[in-house]
Image 1 (tube, rainbow, N blue to C red):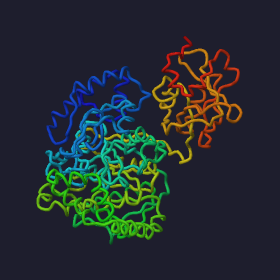
Image 2: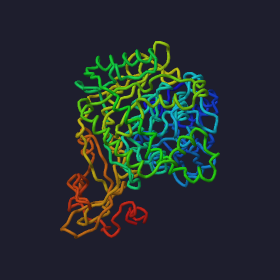
Image 3: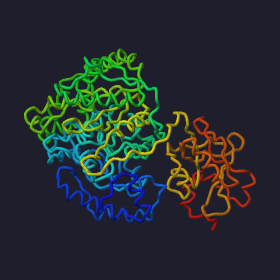
Image 4: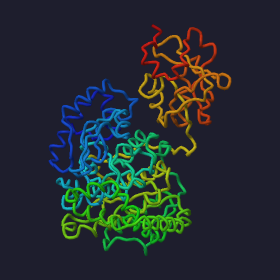
Length: 601
């Protein structure tokens, strides 16, 4: 089977009768054909993945990732597997899936394995590992990029459809550029860090690699569920991106401040990419990037090195030789820093950001080279520090400044090496970045990653305005995993969070079914209980079709939440309570279902 492992291609194949087991066979055949033992630290046994494929049951198009193979970086937990963070002496058994992994599996994805990385996610080269490092999928003589090296290489070879990495200094973007794939670095906090070994907790994000922008963003939408257990989590909207809007102003490094370290081919490739933006209707504005380089320099000085130190302090003190030498050198520098140094660093960062912000406010987003140049494995053998630092030229400042971004392939350079730029925007603008990334990846003709699969641009609609979303509270059969949930997910809705009503509602199990449904009725203040809800977000354009499927006695009205917010949600007409049972004391439809009494027996 030569089926491209993109989400649209797999969904089409599944609808025509292809089974997930056939795709699993294809995945493991590709692993064998690639023959790179450095990609995975922990590859799941094929029979285990086949069992998970069988457990999916019949094709369910309401699950956006049904039967989609993926991998995760080995600083992200998978239940029952060992997490090493690239250091065997640090390894531990993960008791449960990381929050984002659980969300992806709920959406139907199939986990294939855990991938190699620069130890403790410290590095941009992909060679700082006690395990055999993976080989660059395009040119084995070039470094694979890090720290999410295995995750990028697995996608580039077409082994998995998408993978999770992490990104603090560029680890979700540099490997993408070096392997001709997409690297989505989302808004900080939009993807939960629960179950992820931190590098710098205040700056980290889980990142996503894929062969296309569409696939990366689809995985992002599935994973971007608010996690109240993560104190750094943020409730970020992920509306469907569309065709890039016209009239954008995009900032680029000025000719004087751009850094390519003598690589004229890379400079020319970036100039060609800028021409693509102009031809797409954007206004391009040159900016002095010197202040951004000053911000980038702060990442490995002061407070942020000390953050890395907090993760492995005990290991450095008890078994320092277990830490990769270069990693030990970098993180160990924190031992010479004081608390006063940390605060001085934070103050300087704020000053630098304040100084550059007025100039950034004149543009809608930035476009930068994903990497300034290429480095070989031999270059890193000769100097393990300098090339790594240069890779961070256009990446190190991004999380420090709370930006989101996507590294996207552009037409190959004149020497055949992959082209790549990164689009950057303020936090929460992930969809806008994706819309421009669609424009960039559609230029010219290219193969995806290191595969022979040609790229076919998606059919795009005009983008929704940022406010074209509606929040809906559901309390019964439309909740995640319950029988009518597909009516939400099939219309582009995503789960935001769990919540409760104010204490003014009565809750009833309605007569009839299946599907069995509850009814929510509001009474006088304090006359009921706080009823468990899920808050979903749906594109406004799909709301009308959703409403047409809601039968009497249910309807959509305004629901008051325990915290005082108001949202739209399901309410029941008084006439619909004939034969209903009052379950207000249970106050949670899932808990009621556990009693086994939903059918009235």
